[in-house]
Image: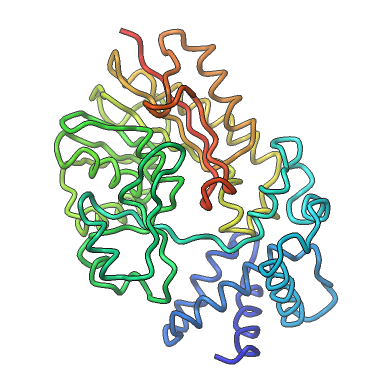
Amino acid sequence: MSPQTTLNRAAAVLRRVTPSLPADAALRTELAAHRQYSPAERRAVVRAVFSFYRWNMWLDERASLQSQLEAALTLQARFDKSPSNIKAEALAARAVPAWLKDELALTPDYLRQLQRDPALWLRTRLGRTAGVATTLRDCVPAGEVLGQTLSEALRYTGPRDLFLTEPFQKGLFEIQDLGSQLVGRACAPEPGQTWWDACAGEGGKSLHLADLMQGRGLLWASDRSERRLAVLQKRAARAEVFNYRHAPWEGSAQLPTKTKFDGILLDAPCSGVGTWQRNPHARWTTTPADVAELAATQASLLANVAPALKPGGRLVYAVCTLTRSETTAIADAFTAAHPEFEPVPVFANRPETALTFWPQELNANGMFVATWRRKS
C-alpha cells in the first residue's frame, strides 16, 4: 500500500465516524470491507487514524482529511524521535480536553505517554509462556510489575496477525492489556473457590480468573449484553475453560443467582480515560456529564453486588479510568456507607488498599483497583 493509499483509506475511516459510530468501530468496519489488506497495511491505516485524533488540535481543519492525516503522522514521527520536542504545556492544552485537569493530575510523563503508540500485551495460559514466546518470537516478558511477578504476560513487538497463529487458535494465549492482567492478580482467586465476574463483558478477566483457579471451583460471569456473553462462550471454549456459568444481569438489586461467593470482581462500566492512549478518539467524545452519570452507576453496582459476598469474602472494584469521581471517590464512599466491609491490600506484598495503575508506569492502559473483605 502506497503512502497516498494509506491516507485515502484512513480518510475513508474518518468519514465513517459519527456520534453513534466511534473511530475504533469505524476502523473495524472499514478493515472488514477490505480483507485483502496485509497486517502491515492494516497497522498503517490504524496508526494514521489514531495519530489524527492524538494530534487533531494541532491540525488545520480547513485542509483536506488526507493533508490533516499526513500532518498528524509527521507530528507523530517527530514526537517518537524526541518526545521533548513537544512541550508539556502544549500537550496539557491540546492533547486532552480542558475538563480533565479537574479530575486528575496532568503530569508531563502522563501526557507524553498518551501520545505514544500503545504496547500490545498477551496473557498466556499457566505454564504455556515459554512455548508461546518461542513459537511467536518477538516477545518481551513483562517480568515484575508493581512488585508482582507476571510470568504469563508478554509484550508482542512483531509483525504477525496474532489471531491467525497456531497458539491463538489452540487457546494458549489471549490478547489482554497488562493493566487488566494486574486486576486478575489483585483478585487472587484460589482453586476450589466460587467467584463472580459481575460485569464480564466478553470475558477477558473471566478467563484469567478461571486460569488462576486452575479449572477448580466455579466462576459466574454476567453482563447486560447477551452478545458479549456469546463471545465469552466462544473464547472459553477455545481456552478450554469449563468451570463457569454465565447469565445476563442488568445491574439491578435482582441478582442473576442466589449463590454466595468467596470473591466478586466488579469491573464496572466507566469513562475509559485510562484507555485514551489506545483509543484517542474517546478524548473528544467523553464529557464531564458522562463521568458523573457513570459514577452514579458504579456506586449503585457496588451496593448491589455486595450482599452476594460471603463473610470473609473478597470484593474487588476495578475501572479502566483515572478520574477521581470514578476511582477514589467511589471507593471512599463505599467504605463509609458499608461498615460491614473493611479495606484490605490490593496485593498481598503491598500495603495499599486502593491503587492507580498509571499508563506511564505500566506502558499499558491506566486502571484503578480497590479491595475489601466482608467482615465475619
